[in-house]
Image 1 (cartoon, rainbow, N blue to C red):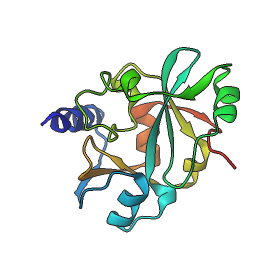
Image 2 (image 1 turned 180 degrees about the vertical axis):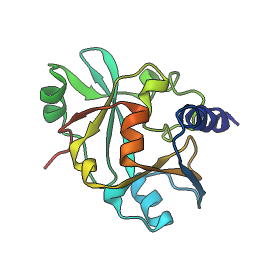
Image 3 (image 1 turned 90 degrees about the vertical axis):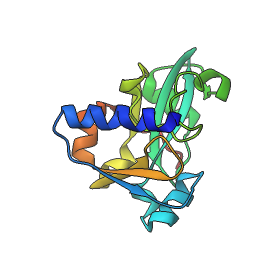
Image 4 (image 1 turned 60 degrees about the vertical axis):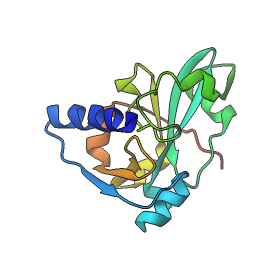
Length: 158
């Protein structure tokens, strides 16, 4: 039931800004690559959220499904010295209204700084988890940038 609150929070945020979006139901997918396969979407258009701790602050990295975060690149891009993957204990309570691992890439709704990997700028549309492992949201890149206001950075490993 909590994923409905998460999805509704995103929908309300987009609707208040007059931003068009589409929600798709699909078979349960626990990874971004599984989501890409379930939706028959190229992985380069499927955005996944990776939670990081950067100098003790929780931050959200948004990267393409097939990519991995480079902690050293993230540290440089964020101007932080100590960057590591966040643990579920560190971010679970922040996204308690979402299924674990299905947080949408809208840190702005949770008071979490959001960083968008520049590789995703090549996509015209982004597909991402909408609070559950069975629903995805489709949104133009321009609309995502307007609604989420992420900082663009080089985050993915080469």
